[in-house]
Amino acid sequence: MGEAPAFFSDSFLGDFPNGVDLKSKGHETAVCVGSKIYVIGGADHESTAFIGVQIFDKSSREWINPTVLGTKPQLSNGHSAVLLNGDRILVIKGNSKSDGCFWFLEVGTPFIREQEKTHGNEVVAWSKGVLGNVEKPIVISGPSGVGKGTLISKLMKEFPSMFGFSVSHTTRAPREKEQNGFHYHFSDRSVMERDIKDGKFLEFASVHGNLYGTSVEAVEVVADAGKRCILDIDVQGARSVRTSSLDAIFIFISPPSFEELEKRLRARATETEEQIQKRLRNARAELEQGKSSGLFDHILVNDDLKSCYENLKNILGLTEDVKTACITYPESVDLPVEHLVSKIDQKILINCGAAEYQEASDNMYVLDLSLLKGGAPGRTRRLNLYVTNPSTDRVNGDDQLN
Ligand SMILES: Nc1ncnc2c1ncn2[C@@H]1O[C@H](COP(=O)(O)OP(=O)(O)OP(=O)(O)O)[C@@H](O)[C@H]1O
Ligand SMILES: Nc1nc2c(ncn2[C@@H]2O[C@H](COP(=O)(O)O)[C@@H](O)[C@H]2O)c(=O)[nH]1
Image (cartoon, rainbow, N blue to C red):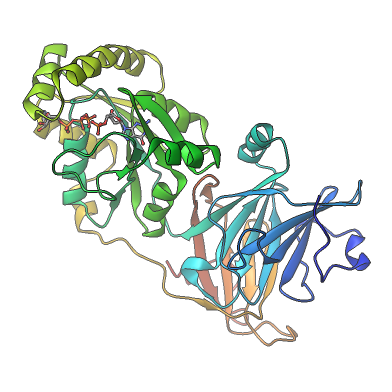
């Protein structure tokens, strides 16, 4: 059990109305969720660079240091917190640029309940909020040699500002032209196993005798760049992602025939004969599972590369118009430390006016959460930020920033 943070006093033990933030005495904020008070702020236990979290259980009157998953927000001079739907807390960091000021602390989502079973104690998870309309990630699966990498390369080349590749970790040795950090993060098994244990992986699987996995960070860095994430993973990995909270599109690539698959694998000349045999054996099982499991939203046959690529683009809604349309990023918004936060339905009103908060100022932001997607493990997407002038506008998002 943990100790009470220094700022905490008995006055915090009263009843707090859920959904309303409480200004802290220092750099901490407390939010009440059922019988628990989440104290957000001060330094994290592991590093003073990050915002810490402690829980006060009102029924047992004990302090709990939860297991904290996800990328943590850096410590800031001040922040506000608002409870959403009873299972996640929106934390708005002052003194931050718009791309780093909105964070979600999940406290009771299905992901948290799942993690608590594994960890056997209280778990919370951070998920960074991403502004704008980045589409859901794409999971591409299929047997080795079918052409997944070839199709993904074409997509990334044609739409460089739209897609980002999730760079997996693997324990297999690099091929001649493969670069560490670009094609894969080539890792020691012991390091990867430890990181899996520490909850750093969204999914992992033993594939053709090696360990492969998608780290939460690999997916997050793509979302942070405002891009749509593409994962190239095997069928086992796709199944794990399906059961995770990562909301994705699942596409299975199938060869026109088994003979053609073998031909492509051999022509690629990257594996030994023994490895080719192993990959072909696994391919039979993958083809069966891919086609029959209902796991995949789309199945594409990669016979003629050009037409398969066109079909892939159609599935992803990529027309010529989309190609020329540039992705819009939210304009830069600097939230001051001093701000007042309130909640109306799915909208968060952020008043950056005078410190005393006597009046709404011209500088009012509205964070619209009605389209929210994703969450831990990974980013929380589709936050929309509007600017409004309370003296002339109704809070309806007419002046959209992004
Ligand atoms: N439609 C196609 N017709 C003929 N050859 C193809 C086609 N698509 C891909 N190839 C070739 O097949 C080989 C295997 O393709 P690729 O490396 O993209 O497969 P992969 O599914 O990514 O394999 P792995 O899962 O092992 O990474 C490559 O040499 C590629 O050029
Ligand atoms: N479950 C996962 N599978 C992955 C991941 N990264 C790649 N893969 C799959 O492994 C095989 C072999 O890849 P290769 O580069 O050695 O030819 C292939 O089917 C990939 O899709 C991952 O992170 N998780």
